[in-house]
Length: 579
Image 1 (spheres, rainbow, N blue to C red):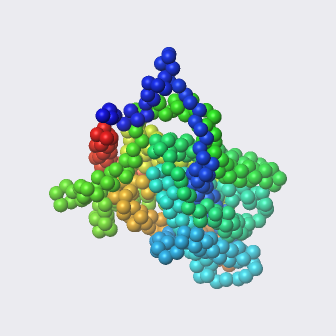
Image 2 (cartoon, rainbow, N blue to C red; image 1 turned 60 degrees about the vertical axis):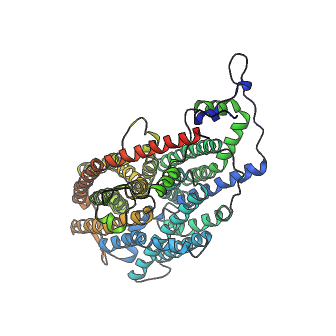
Image 3 (spheres, one colour; image 1 turned 120 degrees about the vertical axis):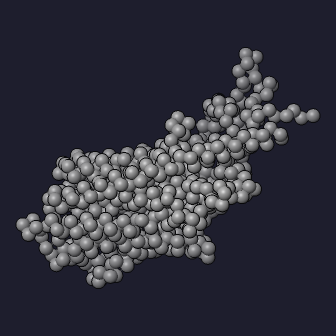
């Protein structure tokens, strides 16, 4: 009779025949995997790299402040009307659901190129306007900004679908990595701007129009292929994937540091071109990451074997899938007749939750204020006599770091038992500190850059962590609808905060320090944004308090989710033990 496996880790233990006389296990060199199998598994990673390229090139709303002053001067509009153009780009998020409908009727490649076409037209027409090739009324420029903002949502949907389809067991890692690269777009465009023509700010619009289209063409082959994989053993596949993800995350951090250091130095055009080539090579390098892991597993099997045996006490179970299976059997858990927080929430139930409104206020007074601040960086830098390109790059780079740090709850769960909403509260803390620092000493270049870095770090974390929090608190199956409800605060905040900032800006442009061209007003000095920084700082304190209350109210929810995870894992061990 076949011996019973005592625990799941027994499958990983070598048998007696594989030991030396001294008790050490024999390490056998693995045969190289079949080329066809290795190529098929490598193709899966080309899809992820394609999604990274798309995300890195389509965060075009982050560089609005780099050319907004020039656009304002050409159109001859006021600061308030310029703010409406920034709102138009954010308003595209309100129509992001249209990409999901399009995917129901068209292939993914069509949706991808539809997004590229919208961006090409939206930014391309604005470039023609800003270069005085054509003249358009303000309403049509507003529609172009709306179309450009919509294209970003369609690009995001295409990338999310690529990650979910090709990495079903690692979709959280794939999504967090690709979303992080969206944060370096402004820094990447700023480097290209310095490398090509640092004297013409309208170059940003031309790059925003052409680069996403070119990247979509480059990503077409990975998008169209459907990798046919010869399935490897589950533990081996998961271990291999985790190593590849680790390499890609390291490359992502190196890329961001490269962009940040390249922009902070005083580069001549030729040096900037070298930095741009280096950035492009770093974006291509992830294609080699799977091959490096294959080579390591083959040429250094002892390392692979040790990592295999060291983790013998840990069984890689897909807890999410097991929980879904368990939920499908037990149904929706209820306390009396009331659905518990953490279960699936309909629209009516969602808006009746106090936790949702605390979450909404925390996002509205945190991440959204950071986004509006980035939209106003052009005028802030101009009023204080600073370089807008440098500030845009700093915000973009630290937003990228914040997005990467959003994975901290998963990596540090055993060491710091803090819920994801607790990390969300900590992430909001730098925002009020940054705004009060700006209010006190905004004239100092170091203070301005430090505050911009803190706001970018905080906003990036919030943008990336929000999807996971929405999924955990209000149900994973409803996250698409519920998260879109949550981010309605972005266009609302963009309109409200931007209007207040623009009104204070124009009110402080006294006749002695302002230049008027038609309705365009340029304000110079510390007073242009001082009251705005104080107001935004107070509002961000409100967001911090709201997030703290949300954390206190949701701690029991995460405790219950942890208990469910442990119970599912235990029952899975029993199932394995009975095999």
